[in-house]
Image 1: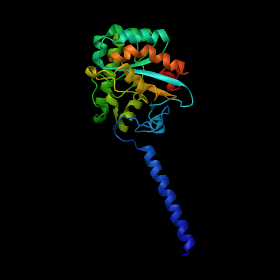
Image 2: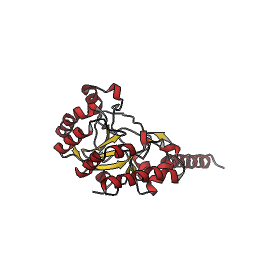
Image 3: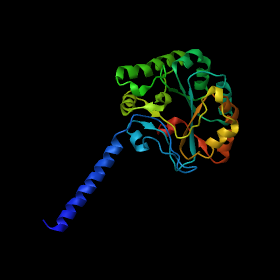
Image 4: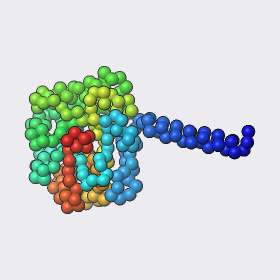
Length: 259
């Protein structure tokens, strides 16, 4: 065999190996807890999975990075006296939001849940009991966590629950994403957040702004906790700052192309 032919075979094998590795990396998702890596100020971060990997399962953590649009979401495991003020500020700015709630929240705060709906916000599924869903491999058990919350929501509001799901603590597996998709859900991660959930260590307003504003980016899916006193205090000013910078706010319906 001539030397040129040997080099040609080696080149073909290298290209084949490269394409195979990338095909596998694009098709296999890790079991992970959602986290972010910010490389450049004002630019979208990297997550444990790419937008393309997530899209196969009707999941997303980021919107259109070519447009100055923000998607505001709140997680709530309990009520801490802050949600009413948050709803007031959202109404003042005409900003749509999504609230991801667990079972005990809906049970104990039906009036607030009904107000979220009446104000035009999405109430999403944060599971009935807030378990580590990545450890649930049986579809029946996975389905029960979501459908029990659906039933509770319907009993309180008289409406079917919107099919948006946020895994508790952001822990997920590829099988979780597949099961959520089979149940008609769109899984919502996030591309902007900060440590706001520690009740005995609430951040100062200055700290919150220093973490949120420099990292704000086009298409950001923002996660805040409605249990945070800091968030309730700064939300009006925070929305003003984002509006001054030219951002608009959109619903998750738009994020998933269902305007």
